[in-house]
Length: 94
Image (cartoon, rainbow, N blue to C red; front, side, top):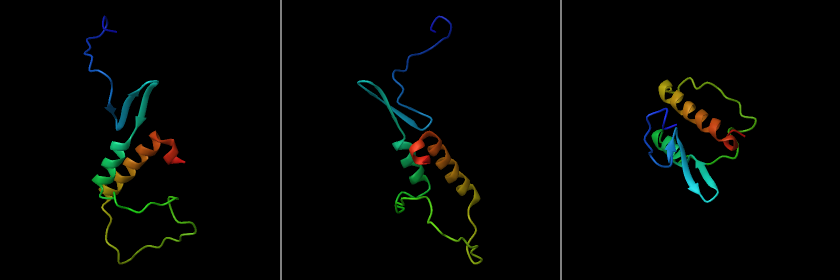
């Protein structure tokens, strides 16, 4: 490739697109600890309680007529971040 393209060797890949790479004896380990932590910190949800399911079973949602408006930009950001995390971590999608 060096004959065809001008390249610079930057060493082993360590972080790209929210995925961390760590070299081990047999190859690489990929994880997203930093990305997930950054998302939780960015939206100030790092202290939320843990749930075994994504929503309560048999929950009936109702519109809160006296509730405040939701920040649509922040909501889209949270959903987009979680969608990316789930698309790269199939165990979270399950």
